[in-house]
Image (cartoon, rainbow, N blue to C red; front, side, top):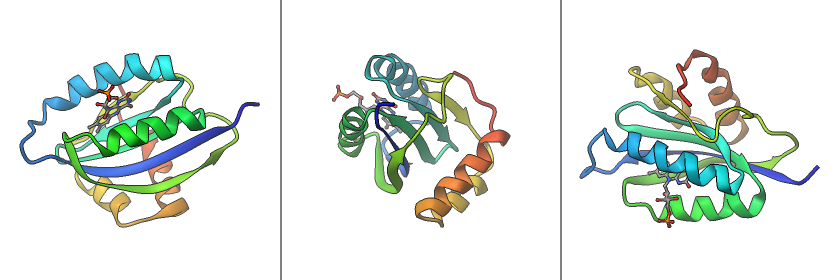
Length: 131
Ligand SMILES: Cc1cc2nc3c(=O)[nH]c(=O)nc-3n(C[C@H](O)[C@H](O)[C@H](O)COP(=O)(O)O)c2cc1C
């Protein structure tokens, strides 16, 4: 099996951006991720982004670099970054879940490392994901 890497991060919508930007981001991300072999889930609560993505290590590294330079969000903090044996997302190039409840991502934000990853994965079943 080829090696895989996964990253979970949290960030804040930049103050000069409208909440509608998430739709444009998700549409472009899907096409690009399909080409790059990236799958994952983007959650947006109106203020915070939390994104979990996986793929070949080089593609994951390149995406992380693009995300860190993207002015549409700020204060990006990587919560988890590690090797992965098997994809967790098969169906989505990048699923999108827009949530009303801010508490979910506030709770993720308070965690780090594997605890953050496990908390996010447990949350997934509650999200209404469009892909
Ligand atoms: C919250 C957020 C999530 C994003 N998710 C992805 C993604 O999953 N895949 C992707 O290719 N770009 C994603 N982008 C966009 C990238 O930051 C970048 O703009 C895009 O990949 C095009 O990069 P380029 O103009 O350097 O080619 C995301 C941006 C933001 C703000």
